[in-house]
Length: 187
Image (cartoon, rainbow, N blue to C red; front, side, top):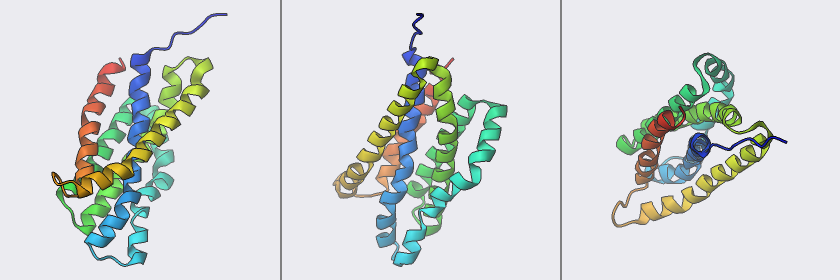
């Protein structure tokens, strides 16, 4: 039986996209903080996540169509860029309206990343290993989701930053160099 080679330089960037997917979980972490900072009612605060999560319902099919025309890697990079923009907006403009815009961009970027990363991963792994790599990709996403809350707590109470919004900056510092590496490593 012929054994297919696993090319880690092609697989690793796509697996890191699943880590990027976990950044949308910052919305859930941010609801409580935004609610306190901006004196929002409980009802209004609980509507904030819809600014991010509604976009998957609205955009997943159109993004899939665009992906078939423009390419999976291109769309994945667009998603990473939109996610980065969504992380930067609340960092630089911390008002209720800009938080909603940032969370919406985060949701749009996450939708694009989710729609593009799974089929791209299937394309770069040997066919007989696709299901195991798809399972492993969810493990990577879970790691990102798991470290978000403790990282937010550390940054919020840090004497260096003392600001919850620093979490967006830290996340973006990971994201921006990663997007350019994806373009380079996947040739």
